[in-house]
Each structure stands twice: as structure tokens, then as C-alpha cells.
Length: 419
Ligand SMILES: C[S@@+](CC[C@H](N)C(=O)[O-])C[C@H]1O[C@@H](n2cnc3c(N)ncnc32)[C@H](O)[C@@H]1O
Image (cartoon, rainbow, N blue to C red):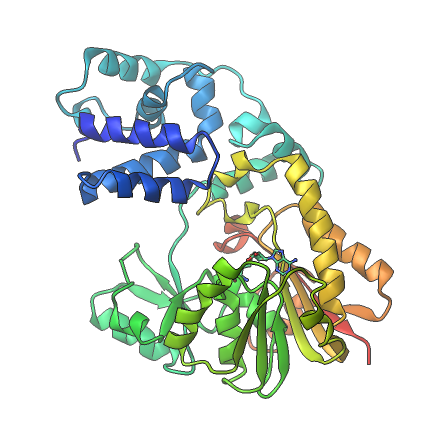
């Protein structure tokens, strides 16, 4: 494929906005494409790929290009060094200085790089990971987070079984296979656009990473139970919980964000679920939460977190997070877990989960909670899954990474309130 000067120009413009890091990269890109209606589909694909490509390998590229590099130079270096593009593929019409730069950067020596540079991570993040991992493990993990994520679906078992979904998609020429771990997962080959597929429109499936699905099986809600998804957001996990409950009982979907929760409503309508009750709360101490103290069978806390386990999809997060933001998050996580725990009735189950890879957001929060709450005891996550026929090596507390399981990075602890 030939790369045009216009594509390089657009990519470098879009990258300039993204690198301000004022907003998430996906929203900056959507806005850029909205403003630049004349850019065609192929050019958009190139721009998105180039921007995400530079975000993934920013430190390596900055090391090669130097601290003063322009976004145009970063794009050219990404093409030359990461994508292995040849001068011939660069097409005609590029300025001589672009082709000169491209040729020069292709042969430039990077010199000795630090571990954080090699892993394309900020120094502070590499240091945190090194507290519990070897340098080789940090690099391998970072590399796995730099590969684009596959596309997973979750079948809505209220409407269809998984084999039927696979067969129907395959009949439509969409290559896919059952997932490895989640009984509801279907993994696609490639990334077909599915928003207009009849089975999406009628709620037979949703897009959901396979690792995220496993959190629902850890909570394991049953028919007729009282359940809360404490940080429901747009309801990715709520919909799975509702289906596991066979659309019976009562499932509260709490969140402090009206905007996020409002995205759950059309998804609920498609899914056919009528047992979900979305409730916008002011904080984890909202009176509507307190009223349910000791009444719920199962509570999921999918806590707000650094999101570093989702770097395959959101590579900008590693540059947008900071130790200060992380310190604030851990205070919030502890407070949410403590409030959510009060809802669980004796014998009930509480799952604390994040899509973070950092022990301070994960094990440390759970350890502090257990130290302060003797009424709760941990259950073995791997055994909880095994009892449902899910065979996975994930540890007593669930740890998933793209490297170990080819899912997004997730942590979860399963806790039971003693009877
Ligand atoms: C990791 S996201 C949830 C994603 C969602 N469970 C899903 O599967 O799509 C964390 C959510 O926690 C919400 N949140 C932040 N502070 C909260 C609080 N104090 N109480 C409840 N939810 C909160 C955020 O608005 C955000 O939607």
C-alpha cells in the first residue's frame, strides 16, 4: 500500500492534538475526524493506526528522533522503524526533506536505552512494575500491551446460545471461534464493523473483552437474587450479570456518572433485560445505597482505576496517568469497596475488580480491606471458575494480562461475608 503525503500530513496534525493529553486519544481522534469530513475512510484508518502506533512506542521513537522532534518526524520514524515501511511505499509527492529524514532515521542508532525506554513506559510506571516483576517480565508485559487487541463478543444467552451465534456469524462470512475461557465469549478474526449487524441490533451479542466477561462468572449471580453492580458505567458487566440471573431477581446498576449510566439504557433495551435498575448515586455513601445495607446476595465493585490493563486499546493512558492521580484513585477505591461491602448479606459474595496491573490498586486495597473487615474471607478465584467448568490458570486472586491469557489486564478478588 502506498502512503500519501496527505495521509502523513493528517496523521501529524491529529497526533499534535492527541499529544497534548488534555483528553483521551479516542475522543480527540473522533473530534478530528468530525471536523475533517473530507478525509476518506482509508486515510482515516491510516491516521488512527499512525497515532496509536506512535502512542504505543513513544519513548523508543523519541529516543531515536530526539526531544525536539516534530509530530511529522515521529510519524516518519514510526513508519521507518516500527512498521518497516520502504521508501518506495512512501509514494510520490513527499517533500525531499521528508524522504531524507525517513532514510536517515531508518539507519540511525538508538544507543543504549533504559528499561523504561525499551518497554515504552514512563519511568515511574516501569519502577512500580519492577517492584514485583523482573526486568524481562516488565518488558514482555509491556510488549504484549503494545499489540492491538482482538475483538471479542459476548453472546446474550437469553436470546441465543454461543454455538448458534458462531454458526450465524460464520454463515455471514465473519470468521470467528468460541473463546478460550468465558462460556459466553466469541473471538473474531480481524475487526469487522458489527454495529449494523442484525444480531447486534436485536441484542444477541455485545462487544466485550473475554477477560471482562470472567468477572461476571466470579460474581456468579443466580436466578432471583438481589445483586448490585456498584460501578456499572455503561453496563458492560451489568448486562452479563442480568443474563446470568436469567432476567429474574433485582440487579442494581449504580454509578456516579449519569452520562455513563445513560449509555446502559439502549443496551438494556436491545438485551431484553427487565431486571436491571440503573441508579445514579451522588457518591458511594448515597442514602439509596445505604438503604440496601446487608440485603444483597452479590455485589460487584468494578472500581475506577488507572486502566493500565487496557493499554492495548488505550495506549495514551500510560502517558496520561501519574503517581499523583494514582494516589487519589487508591483512596477512592478503598472507600468504594468499604461502602459496597456493607450491602452484602451474611453468606453473600463481594468481588473487587480493576483493569489495572498495579499492586497498589489491587492486592493492597483488598489486603487493607480484609485487615479492617474480619467478617469477610477470600475465596479462591480459580476454584470459583473451575466449579463452573471454566479451566484457567489465573491464581487465587485473578490476574489476567495480554501476555498470559491474551485478554486485557484484569485483577479480581472474590470475598465472602461470613454467615
Ligand atoms: C471501570 S469503570 C466501570 C466499567 C463498567 N463496569 C463496565 O463494565 O463497562 C468504573 C466506574 O466507576 C464509576 N465511579 C467512580 N466513582 C464512583 C463511586 N464513588 N461510586 C460508584 N461508581 C463510581 C465511574 O463513573 C466509572 O463508570
